[in-house]
Image (tube, rainbow, N blue to C red; front, side, top):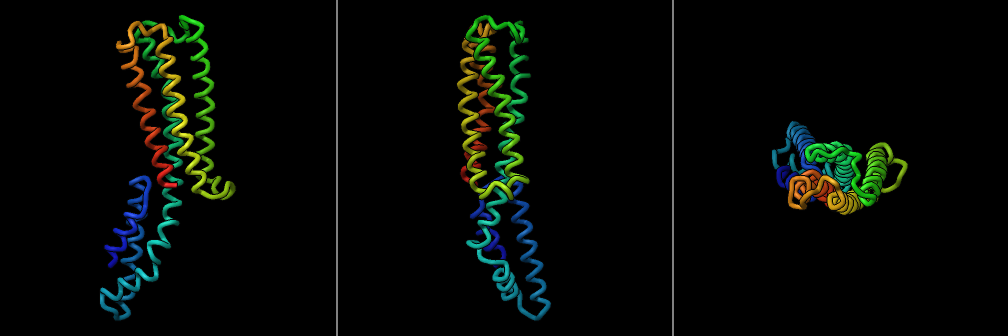
Length: 213
């Protein structure tokens, strides 16, 4: 009965696999310990497990509490991923320009300089907001209201970051003095590798936040 209960709880939860696995393992251990206590009182194994499950509470009752913690964990992970990606991106972009024999400040055109400035300020603002989400989904939960709302905000923010920086990255590539050919390494292929893949991972994490909220 404990195995069936744990399997049902596992299916009801959505969130980071490692965190969920730890929660499920902890629930199983608690149930097994309780069942052993009931066995020591003289109950057979089946009745002992049934009593342990009854004391623990139904999945419908327990799952929402577990889901809150999973959602917050997913929100924090997503925000930290945004911080990591947006911190590394300027270094990666500099490396791409250096590979093409261009300096980071070789604007080449007014359009490129303008877009580059927008990227810098938008990136800095997004990092600050992501750090705020990390705090909000951690210690800030007790002050900022329902946890599910915070997780949804993290998910929407992640999706917005993916879209905004995908557009900015494309514009930066089109106007970049290092882009001799859109099909070259410093063109769309390089952008897809250095920017597209990380942004897709952020979008996926954002979708998971919305699912876990």
